[in-house]
Image (cartoon, rainbow, N blue to C red; front, side):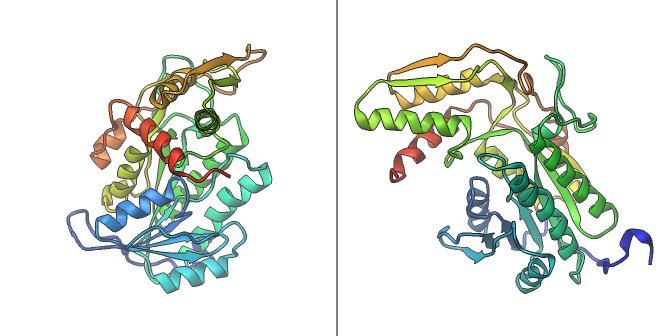
Length: 333
């Protein structure tokens, strides 16, 4: 046994059918009740796949989606292995992780540690499974204004979250090379859609707008500088890309950018949300006193078109409307 595979039984065959097979898959979605996981589960179920969402707190995701309770941040390799052996998935989608409201230690646990344990657990299975890892545009770090970020751009993250997500991407690529998993990472831009995390910029804004609407008052938003331009992408577009990545055989071993290929200012996104809400609002930005963490993001999405047959929507109005309406449907705390 080579050093690369020591301690693992390398599966000889892959469980993933060809994209034209048309047969339902058994799909396990880690973090399946979260912002990204929930709509991914629903879309998979609507396509006829057998879906199990794995999450710390079980929630009803509707018909066709079973939910398995497991604290992924705390689960050891044996626990994850037992769950995967029981569920026997063709595909594992890792939609767990996150950055909003988490300490560095918590981010490390829910991102890097989880992925490392998932790979080790998957390597113990009798057949190789497709692992779709959701990565982040923040893995790239800083680039000059007016330039795009292709997948072969050397990654140089400038924040802990980006560093942790890059470690996940590297681990999945190495596991694919070693034959432990059939792995692909989708390097995703800044996602906008229903269920936006409350600690995110748009999550904070939508909460304040809804508060003002309920009180019948004019909203006042006092925010940090909003001039940074980033690649914002709609939640429904991300879900569509994930579904394609579950079956396309040619994506194994790749890192694929998923964004709009457009650098839009955070100010434009906040203003779009204000416009969609219809709430009278005073927007006040603080003066910038230091360099931005990153001032420019624009993903090159050509490889996604080539390998997935995927392309993003032209605008984000529909996604922003769904963000606003979903916030209105929630019960206030």
